[in-house]
Length: 437
Image (cartoon, rainbow, N blue to C red; front, side, top):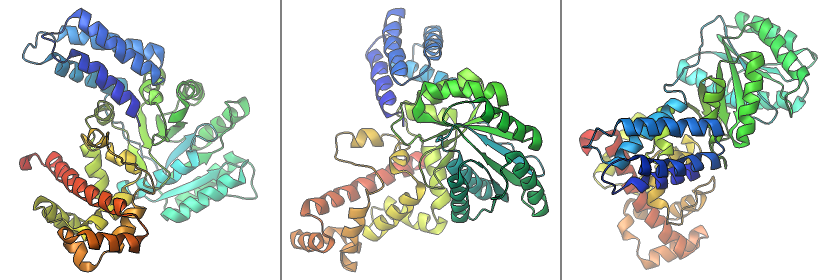
């Protein structure tokens, strides 16, 4: 997510490094590159131009701060403007109502159904509510089945009517069911289409008028770029939605939708989806996203995500061992299991300040299968070898390689990554606890 954009902006801002002061000339040169990077990332042209004009005006206006180096000053200005561009502050979801009704909208394939399940799981765990999922896509039987499967996975009930083809009637009946069964949040998954059409808009408008939702969330696939922004404008003109959800930010997206959509429709981005797993959902924080775009990581979100899956006692025990450099392969295996629970690995590591730079020139392939070979190698070690990593000599490595079905090079690579993870975890500890720096 934003990897290419981040690299391009960072390279552009380096143009000011070594400059004695900010001038109209060097700022113009720097921002010309920044604007091109934004346009290549599929940011709306007017948004990109307005953004760079604002940065230029503020950078030149702040040049009185002679104690601050020009490139550092520009990074601050760009960060502040990126944050403002994406909405400034996080806007929370409204769960007022008896029950609170959340209406999902968007095109077919945007990820509405999957996100509905993720949102239900988050609302139950984070907000302590009792959600009900409602299947109102009467045109695609697979959507109803998918929602039931998701509901079963996360332990949230699903209301559906196989014999009813009127989504408005289903939505009304679902509200009554929720009231009778103590569900204080109702999430309505609606039908999507391959393109915006009048029949779909009339249908979802009728559902809105029937259930009076507290929230209308527009779900958009971030990989569709400017098409996503245009679709959002169309939906907003008809529904006046309350917030945007960006899905598939773990994919090969250039990020333009996230940077454009807030300015174009003037509605906050409330959530992002970062993978297929039920826990792959995050609240959208503009300042934190600006940190990540500028390569600063997002240690706050990393720690929050870790706290959701880590057992406090286990975390405290391992933290002490990391601080004392006593981490062994049993701890390493435990860390692997916890990291897998945290979600998409590439997205998680992007939150760690400096991680991408640290691994840029290394053979690090971060995907769902990253840990399979590692786990096989560790499981082929003896209990003594797991607790005494320093004991792994040549003959032991050969035996472990044969037992795990891996090469000796892969065993050596694991040992190297074990050392890298020790350093990384110590770095995370320092970032999250300044007193230890």
